[in-house]
Image (tube, rainbow, N blue to C red; front, side, top):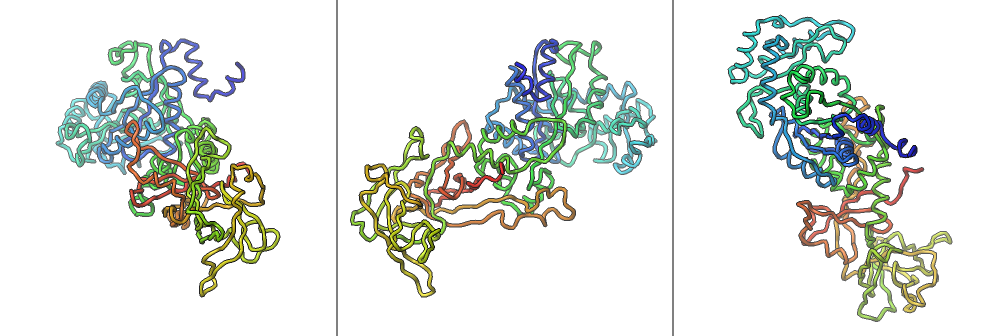
Length: 573
């Protein structure tokens, strides 16, 4: 039992303490509240795993709530992609809510604040308001509109909502304390005017929209959230979160919530995810997409969920990664090598092996007289339960150019004339006899003989050789486009470097080649399999090359494979 306690992260410890004390009648409710203004990235996944994971572990519920309070940046497209990404990760929400569900309630609360002298309409510019905020050690300066009459504030706020006031001309501010050491308490903005863009759900019904600090805590309260889990940058917002709830919760206003007068949500914060060789800023990601520096939000070099998925990362690997890095109150930088190590571990046990030749040269087996045959190879060596595949074998094969040397020393164990035996993967033992070159001296054809009694899996196939090489049969081989992805940035922490972050991009983050793959991959040239509305990815290990996934650009005539990661794992070193 003691060992289990030590394994709990600090959020889980808080939850277990609350359960032990009988808080919220033993009810656990969390929420994941993304703003639908872009695509989810791996930083969001850390929050997703915690929000949904807490609910799963303690028999609670996690709702999905879209923080749609800024129509200028939000679209239904983003709502749909967020839902799809969460489903792909393997999580299920209880209900879907929107901050816009509460626009009327929030507006009514703002009216109450005005009537109680706790809010006022300010006509200053954003720059003037910022200048008057002061510093953490110096008090701010009160707005000249801070003490305008309640009736006038009501009239102006209602005019703002009716669309009678131009955008950016007025805001509604909470009247709190311009000398508070917490800058967020210095009369924060509660509402601003947005008339230039219709809302993706409510259209033109509203002309004023609540700010995050005013909408978030109240939305939690309306829904019955017990544990409102945020990243550390919101820790300084927590007192304001509590302040707004204090103004309407409790015995006097318990009618707003079905959970009783003693109920109130509690906000807790954890460290954000920062990973080497990438950027986690949505603004910078948007620049990369808009300027064509990447192929889109789902470019496999991007840290977005759809990008990771297209790169070949699996939900299980991503969730394992989150478990390994854990949740603390200390910000840090995670080595991208750990993420690569995790997916490599996952695919090592699940990805079928296939032969692929990246730099092909023809091999002719001069004493092979048959019309060809079928070789049965295990999908993963030593794992018969994972099935087998058929490989065509014949007189003419493709092998890697680097697997043959016309003149080799005794440290080279692959093909070279002189009687050295080499096994062709899952098939026969051969010996090179010579080669043919073009006018420039480049080898065009390698010649060899084979031992017909050395076939793998037969009684004579147990003879050992010092090298095994990959091959594909020429007539059945399939051309494939491979996209060799590497880290997007050439430096470890591009966000910390001075200058333009775009100058730090890795020029070799994508290399495209055409290769030869064994004919068994011809099965990929068909319509994708759809399960629960999600297209299923097929992963492979291209022997001696790395782990790859079939890209959605694949057609019935053209196979495209994305490299997920190399075979070599430097992380543990």
